[in-house]
Image 1: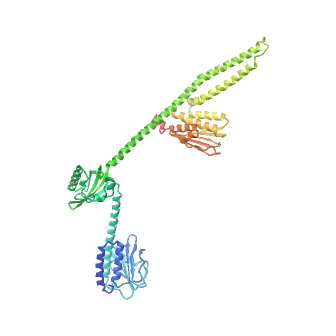
Image 2 (image 1 turned 135 degrees about the vertical axis):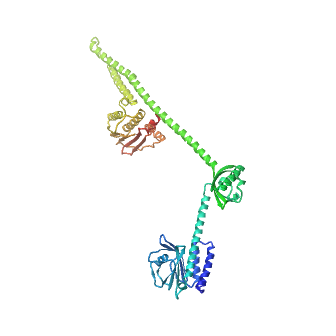
Image 3 (image 1 turned 120 degrees about the horizontal axis):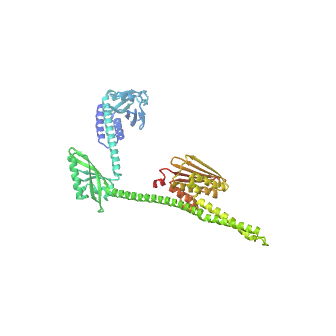
Length: 548
């Protein structure tokens, strides 16, 4: 074939290239086939085909073949600069550029062949690539007859463009098919007669039919007569008004005999004035309806649970306030009743003791003084009565300190610090921020948390220094109780864990914090003391204020 004159070889090559366009080759495969045909058709020694990207000024070597040597390495991308003969060909794409042996190109390097032609591949006004032809020896045909290779290059550009479009279309179809197959709804295509041309695999889950069991069959075989009539009427109306999108419903029988309702959204494709086919997406609204009903049911159950929680919080708040009032009542009754009786008894004992002493000094007729045992017994009773009165007073104060009702939360905390100092501890009490009166329902609960925290430090910490800090902020009260004691391993804050650990005082603290909507944290390490931190909402964001 290489012995044919240039025009005959070119004519043969163009015919062969026409066959390539009817093949099923990719762009790269088609161009490689063309390069080999050129090498076989013309009296040349090497061929390379490059695809050019003007925006990035780069050229990709799709194919490079030769009888012995190659013009350029295949499967590489070249950067086309302004000094290269490739850029010159791109700027003047009207005829080939001929270079000779020893020519030094900034992109292709030094030419080792006797002659080479840089042929632009054009599509319309755009340069899409280059065809490089090289020969050793005599003057090649392309120098005397450039029109042949220009025609071949143009045909190659057209083939490359067509192959790229076909390849892109295939990829698009594959993506479309993958999208349809992975859709969560039933996707189908009906021809103008209403027969299924395509059904995705969701037909198995939604209808119980495999796609191949539906394709070729009339949709009216599966839907109810009412659904068939509604669908046909909708299609006729859409075609008459040239609508491209319609919606309708199917009540369709599954393979197992059960009926399901599908909502369909369809797109119509026309050929001229006639409907060619339409494709639809069908969704099982019965399943969706059941899901919504389940969601609504759970929402209602959640609302009931929240209402119960709010009522329980309100009940516990009321119960705690009632408990505080009961403590105050018991404290008053102890103070006004039992303690007063004991004080009266104490005074009677004092009077008895003075009477006995007086009789002893004035009854000269008695030869013997009263029995020392009687005097000792009176002294013991006096001491025991003093201790009983002191304990009852302390008990009454702890039940409901009068200072809390008379002077408020901060003064009550200061009183707690005084109590701890009487036990031999050094106590530092600090208040920051703008001190304000707390709501009654909050004040009692917060006081009990502070009371329990200080009591734990006094009884269990082994410390000699206790710090109580109160920080008043806009809508918050921050409380810190710190000691320098022996520390401990704090149990988990879950009530069950605290009960199991015997920490009933902590249980009460966490329960009150829960009622207050407060955060509570205990930080402690062995040998490094303990820190109790409480943050209490006191403004409108307090749960107790909301329920009030």
